[in-house]
Image (cartoon, rainbow, N blue to C red; front, side):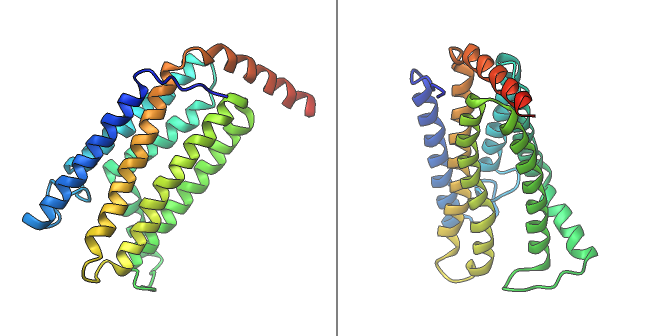
Length: 232
């Protein structure tokens, strides 16, 4: 069982969530004053809300990369790479651009009120998801009990993030044109992503502060590797 230090950790989470709430409030004000698509909108590329997400993702990349060294466990590298991909995807719109190319090349047709590019984006997200399921799954298998416990918590939060970014996004495309539904769906989708990412960011920082578990994890990892060798 990993012990997340309570001292100062709850304050970090509170600050992250308050900032998320501020971003949601700014988004609502901008929606009714200057319309969507502005710098103040959470859905805008390179906007204020997106920029805050970039910072949290970057902190997660660094946090899990540092844990590789602190805990002498390379399994954390898979989580660092996962958040590195999420950061690159947000910065360079990987799934949008690649999805558009795939949809054009394979001549996808619109269905269920979804455009061809939407199916391309879903395909790219599915491929990336499968890749990281395999990568993190292998790390989970060989990572030791402490890493496995951490991995479960991280994946629950990543699952919530994926639900907001994929499922709610698709729902927004399908029914977002109905009067009165666009803004609530934007808040649920983009605000939900921000909240889940804040939870992940807080957890990553908390793990860096859990120095007491470093020696325990090294012992767990050695025992787990020995058991895997014996089972072979």
